[in-house]
Image (cartoon, rainbow, N blue to C red; front, side, top):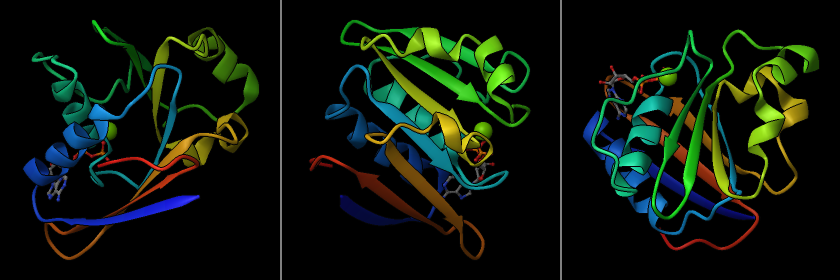
Length: 146
Ligand SMILES: Nc1ncnc2c1ncn2[C@@H]1O[C@H](COP(=O)(O)OP(=O)(O)O)[C@@H](O)[C@H]1O
Ligand SMILES: [Mg+2]
């Protein structure tokens, strides 16, 4: 396990970190994000999508549960698991259809669905510090250049 620790001081910093992370992101990677409301999970994902060349709006798919982005290099499915807690509910979102090896699957509120976090998932754990400070830990089974 490779562990990378960062501190960000603004939403823009967190987006920049996501952008840097996107460079080494491979199709099929599951990215399990942890951290409560306002931690910066969506900001991180937005940065990843900016890095992949997507310039449109990126917000938590709270009602849709999943937003899908088609990229030239890879597809990305962005899940918000806030309202999901059982295997059956997860199945109903189409989650398992995205584990096709072509799609990077990002999950907000991974705390809710520990059974769906793969052994080889990358974990992004965000802790809220004072004010705009965020401690962001990235745990990856493979070494990554960020
Ligand atoms: N260092 C930071 N990183 C990310 N967001 C930050 C940071 N500091 C302040 N913020 C604010 O915190 C909120 C994060 O929102 P969001 O990314 O939607 O969080 P989440 O998806 O985890 O609920 C935004 O309002 C953002 O402006
Ligand atoms: Mg969010």
